[in-house]
Length: 130
Image (cartoon, rainbow, N blue to C red; front, side, top):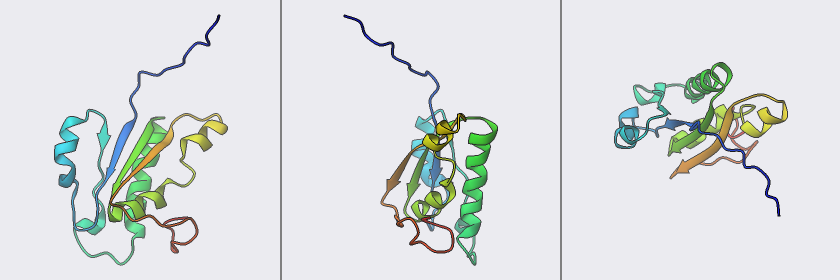
């Protein structure tokens, strides 16, 4: 009886924490202190009123590109509330399964939505949800 070798990795994915509306990255402090591999951008909308959610999507996209394209990291995206809407809008094309099919490293391996807005692909309009 033979068994196939398991392929495992010892590298933990980076966790990208996206806060909700009316919050700041400080919302994540209790969780952040327990993690050794996390990132937490500040969304422009948390400090002032913005005219569009596109600014928040751009900040998240920039952070994802830094982690994935520059550092070849695997990322778990954790989105709370409004963060689900803008977080999902920033992921397109950076999904790990798509990058693997193109023989590229890194990518978003999971998305976790905590009491978050979910917008069906193509229904969000203006860039989020598809």
